[in-house]
Length: 477
Image 1 (cartoon, one colour):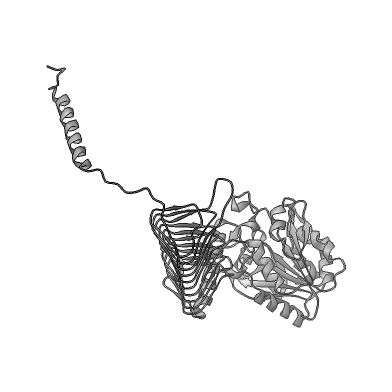
Image 2 (tube, rainbow, N blue to C red):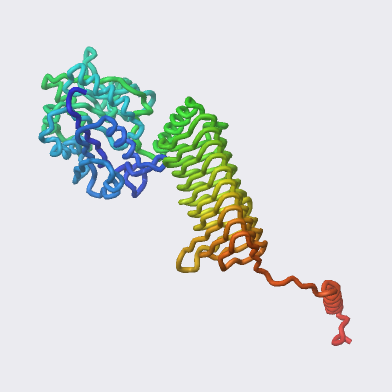
């Protein structure tokens, strides 16, 4: 681009067809609001400034975009796209470059396509350039009307006659404009039938003024689709999923069933990793080389090392799993946890805000919370670190080479020293010295012939019940 760039994103639409109290552009695709996709594409163009036009009830949009360098313009009444752009004109008052107009409900538009439009706009010295595309089947897009191949106007679907409805080249709602074209907004007339000012009318006005107007067929229909309904939202999600999965396969990732997985665009997965069906990889998750992710697992904002195995139905949230570890099946790794290299977290084990050392095993039915577990520790089945006293959370420390027997409760705050043993069934309330055996049980004792006496007692009770039912009791006699 030879000229400075300003971007205006129109995001004040009510979105009534979404049947929702949430603003249309705030609905999410893979955890990310629609508007954020559009803003991200715009930011890649490195504009001097970006203005988002919103409605008065737009606090959610402003909060979502808080981390971006943006201006906001409030369209007080919903009077159409022409009025929306006019609302943003205050931020463009002294700007002498090119203004790119986008719609906030088009999350699939790419910066690559936008760069093509701006390049053609600059190359052909257009006053206004329209990004158009070919639409098939029934639709409600505005038609690009040409006369001897030159753009004459944009006709909205409801205003088009039978001949114009046959036109396949349609308007995407994306424009590149020079400053003097923006001045024509004051001449756009109110559409009495709709009660709105159509931004599309600026094209016809520019033609009448003798300005250079062009429309360029770029991208595809799917990329240009605006989100107006829940069906549109679902289709956009599937389109993004297919693009993400295709890119990952191109880079060496294998999928057992590519149509059943859902992977957020920000996620990164390295080569030779195998993804089984119905896997969800969310947020900014990073998965290393040679991993296997088995079915029905969900990984969110986590870092997975190389050659890790995530077994069936495992949930990992905001945590780290290091090289060659194995997690699952049916394990839950909660936020703030770190699973060490070559360690094993097995069936129905829950780990919360804990560090698991290298080679440590917690194979069955355990809860480890707010704990620091050393290297080569064995956590027996049914072990619980009791971290909560009803008011505060406390930390458990288990040092290297400790063996914790099954069904043990470790009452934090407590420390189990290096190389110590905790006998099965123990409740540990005090620090355990290194290389010690900690046992906390009542003494086992045997009551002779207790089982025989129990059988006789049961037999007598059954006999009495039988007599009552048959009426042969002393009272009956």
